[in-house]
Image (cartoon, rainbow, N blue to C red; front, side, top):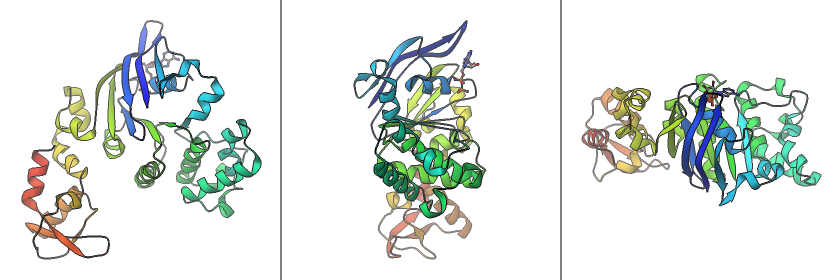
Length: 312
Ligand code: ADP
């Protein structure tokens, strides 16, 4: 668990981060979202001490980060940034090995770790280990950047606009992959973005910042239903709220007994997709099929309307 307590950074007369306190639970993906200049990067960089706070502290599993030697901090906290920050003259394998090498791991352990990570990120080691960053696509570079940040098995991964340089299609895939990898490794992640859509898609909890202050910290559904300020409402786009709420749940969660006509929807389809399918096919209900294709019940338009209007 990471506890941020009263973190503040003042530059001259400007308060870049203003008394921010929040608790990040182990295994959660927490997204810090806000407009440019809101203080997101400064907050994040105080967590790994790239920037020294003016006031406040960060506790990692109860230990004050200020008291940890820097190499220990680098081991516990991985850092991935926009444009990945890969070393251009080092191979993919050497890039991923950066922190383990600094920590003095033996060569076999490093090689095994690099290979595991390449496989985890769907990059065939035989093809990619010896390539240089400029020989990779943008999406591949991004994956190598994240693999490098995870190399020493950090307790916490910080990601600053990690998908910012990717085009929309690659970006959506990269977001899905990150979520899957995070579930698999149960790494605690704090991710910074200016994109509320990305925050809602990825976050277990969302921290909204404005002018240096933390103005709301809550799970996505809570932020959608009860935005703390009109500013947050504007970030969400109030008119889209019902659809975004539906996108947080799957057909499996709202399946009920009974039959329905026509093509089945997948149990893991999100309810926004299901709504679109029902509207397009002009049906009041659709069968829901599990991964094996077996129908497990139905989902109704009436239920979707209820979900979109009265979230939990
Ligand atoms: P964000 O990541 O949300 O875009 P930043 O954390 O980068 O915001 O910046 C927050 C505010 O602090 C901005 O107004 C920025 O101009 C200011 N700031 C950031 N770094 C410095 C610095 N090194 N010196 C002076 N002002 C800074």
